[in-house]
Length: 75
Image (cartoon, rainbow, N blue to C red; front, top):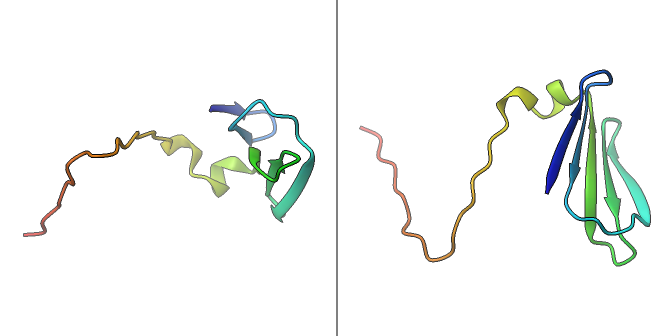
């Protein structure tokens, strides 16, 4: 997965695969998804990314299967 940010247009492009795009669908006026011929997600474009996606606060966390659950307690 690749995330590209174009500051001149405030656009984020999230690429999930290198498959060929067969169709682009508009989710709303600022978010578009690209699908391959089988309907699988290829990429997502986010216009006005700083407002739409809280771009400055990007984080990534990989969750492994079989990991012990973490429980948070509020005191």
